[in-house]
Amino acid sequence: MNTPNISQVKRFFLSLQDKICKQLEQIDGHSTFMEDYWQREEGGNGRSRVLTAGNIFEQAGVNFSHVTGTSMPASATAHRPELAGRNYQAMGVSLVIHPLNPYVPTSHANVRFFIAEKEGESPVWWFGGGFDLTPYYGFKEDVIHWHTVAKTLCQPFGDDIYPKYKKWCDDYFFIKHRNEPRGIGGLFYDDLNTPDFDTCFNFTKAVGNSFLSAYLPIVEKRKDITWGDRERQFQLYRRGRYVEFNLVWDRGTLFGLQSGGRTESILMSIPPLVRWEYGYSPEPNSPESELYSSFLIKKDWV
Image (cartoon, rainbow, N blue to C red; front, top):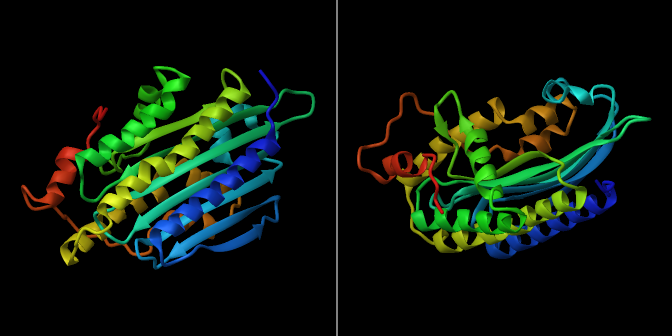
């Protein structure tokens, strides 16, 4: 197993952040990203970039962080007890895009690298990441495109990779207290450290580099569809599910908060406007009800 190259990973993550921000600004055509460069007192730093009030994107956050520490938070050692007593570094790019038009889906992507070291022992390291899509109004061709890109990027790494990480995504982005998926899934993987560093890094690069190919064609196709208050109110209601998952179930949010991460950057995934409604149920045979019956289901799309 070859030795992890931490500086190489960091260079890729920084370049990926630059590339994604540039292309999102180009397609929005109105707003640009503001950047906060921050230092973490306990160790590490980051670049948080947020675009607001765009023509297409109501809010988009694309963050890079590289944090270090001398002891792991409880959420991490519970998951991986062998990490106790080790110094660690965690770095990655995480993004969440909340469009204004309800016919354009919300999207999330993340690629990350973690390494924990202790004198006299081999390092413990892994990659993780993926991307997933959360539509408010479903279009079958969009979902097929999204999953086709995911399957294609996985193919060079083995026939079993896409079905494995597609299922992991379905299982992970599931709102247990609502008994429903957050969206239509995509890819999710964690603890990836086999068979060797280069293979794991190449797969992570493929995931990061494929996100825009999966998402931007959907944005282009749906961004000019006319919408009104009905669609807006449903979008805001469904955004509530996004908030519930991120604050109750998401391991990344929990790790960030417990490890003393930068709160503003961690919570940039929360949409700028959201609403809840007691006992809501969509009208039968409506486009809103179709989201539940035809898209918020576990299904092999490709």
